[in-house]
Each structure stands twice: as C-alpha cells, then as structure tokens.
Image (cartoon, rainbow, N blue to C red; front, top):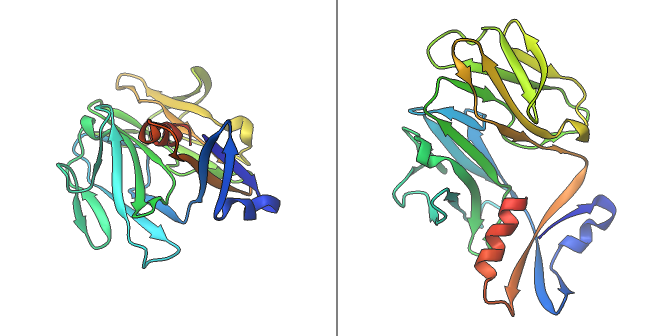
Amino acid sequence: MVLRCEDSFAFLCRDLMIHITNQIFFILTLTARLTVSPSSSQFFKGDFVSLSCEEDDSSAGWTLRRNTSKGNTTQCGDGWGTSANLSCDISYIVERDSGVYWCESREGPISNMVNLTVTGGSVILQSPVLPVMEGDDVTLLCKTKTTPSNLPAAFYKDGSLIRKQPTGHMTIQHVSRSDEGLYKCDISAHGESPSSWITVTGDTLTCLCFCSFQHSQCDDNLMTAFALF
C-alpha cells in the first residue's frame, strides 16, 4: 500500500499509526534518495554502474538492497556489487542484475525505488531513472552499443508510435501526468530497446506504508508496497 500525501497533510506522514480493517500500519517518510550513475534506467550487458544513497541524516547508515526476477532480496556484496566510498559499484552488469533497488536503514526502507533493466541486445533507451517534476523538460536518447548515438530512431509510448527523430533524441517539453507511461525506442537494422516506465510527480511528499504486525505475511506486503511505489 502506498500513500501520496499532499503538502498540507505532510505532517500526517511523520510517526503516525493508522488502523485499516483491523490491521496496523506504520507510515514511513522517505529520508534519502537513491541515485544511479550513469543516470539511466537501462544498461547494456557489461556496463559499469554505481549506486549511492543521498541521506538527510548521514549518521543513520544505509544498506543497498535489491529484488530481482529470482524473487529474493539481497544486499550489496552478497554475491553482487562492491561497497566503495559510500556507494555500491557493479563493475560488469548482466541481465540477472535487472530488478528493483532501494536503500534501507536499520529501521526499514528510507529511499525511493529504482528499477534497472539490463539487456544483452544492441539498443537501449536512456530515460530518467528518478521521477520527473511536472513542467520539466525530459530528453530521451535511443542509443546503440557499437555505433554513434545519433542514428534515426522511432519512439513509442504504451506501444504506440509518438514520433520519429533523425538524431535519436526526443524531448518532451513541460511534462504532465498524462506523459507518464511505458517508453521504448527502435533503431532500424539495430533493434528495439526494452521498455521503461517514466513517472511524473507533482509537489507532493511520498510515503511508504507497510504492515507492522498482526499479519503473518508482513515481509510479502512490504515487497508488494515496493512494487507499487
């Protein structure tokens, strides 16, 4: 379960307990931001990727965790990634690294979720890895692995063609909530990229709601909340 709290009700997201259908939930305010370098939600197999958590309270400490298609939650260094200089580096990313990543403290999740997709193909779509604000301009880049990134490309949203661009770049000006959706691109004779979701957000505070007790599947509920965020 995920709640979006408007600014005027932001105080409700702090240290609040609510009762819903006799179940008890905690509302947790996210206090950190997970960033990805290079800033993209899609990568070619073999790319280097670095993830770090920017915290409001640097003394809290954090651990980078992920959930992949295997369905198990693991942390950086547990068979993947290397902790270095307050970041987690993946020196050679592969398809099995595709999944959802987030920062977690001793008290629980403290950051946004990031969904990374790794492909063994020859085309990716470079798009914002974090939600974009309403009114901002967003540039998408259709990129090939072995040739220049300025080849003509077709861009799609939710399966429908938006436009064809001669240089492989497409800018969406002054984005709104209607621009949210699943985007991909195609370069003739090279192939199609995977799809990535672009989220557009207003001036709101996002809170993560998860089961605390009185439920035998709290961990499953927590992962469901991540998937919906």
